Length: 229
Image 1 (cartoon, rainbow, N blue to C red):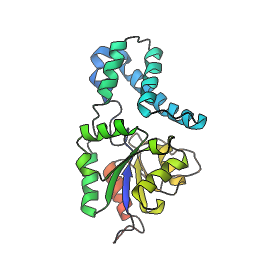
Image 2 (cartoon, one colour):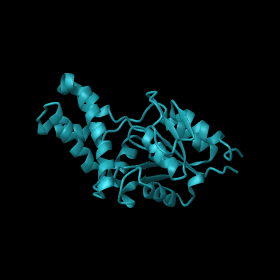
Image 3 (cartoon, one colour):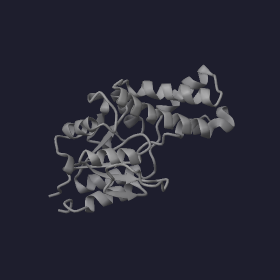
Image 4 (cartoon, helix red, strand yellow):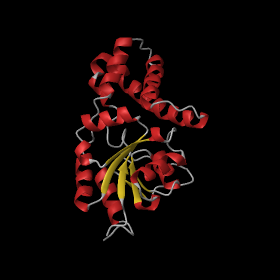
């Protein structure tokens, strides 16, 4: 019997391509598209950290909109219609190519599969349905139930509680190094999908493994000590 009860995945940046919205509207954004996309994503993440520190939680969709406001002003874009279209397009998430093979491998192994995200429930549920992943997931977990954002320990404890298991029996896969560190510090078996080949974050806790793809993350967790039948 597997000692791994469940494997959960971060959503945005891990399962879903966060830069898809700006690519779709690149003709309207022109040469500012890449910088806008990078700023939007970086501020989106940074605002969750800052709100967690300030204990000023807000739904992730609100944070996403505020981050876009900043990014558009930073690249000198003032167009309410374009902003509305970017946000609408952001809801049309695209899964990375390695998502389905990774989830199917877990189905074959008999391990429960879930998504665990900063996104608020409505945003996350819509993303899972639009991407076609709903039938492949057993759990859709938002930080909203904890009232704060990653990497606060209470957030990872909330996810484990929703799965009715324990941290050491929960695998966690994310494409964010800081998220992997947070999950590892909370006792989860975290693997970092380092698609960009970035250095490991200098934080108190580190992931159990660093791999280039979701399929390798799944293989690593399934074959790790204590996971074999």
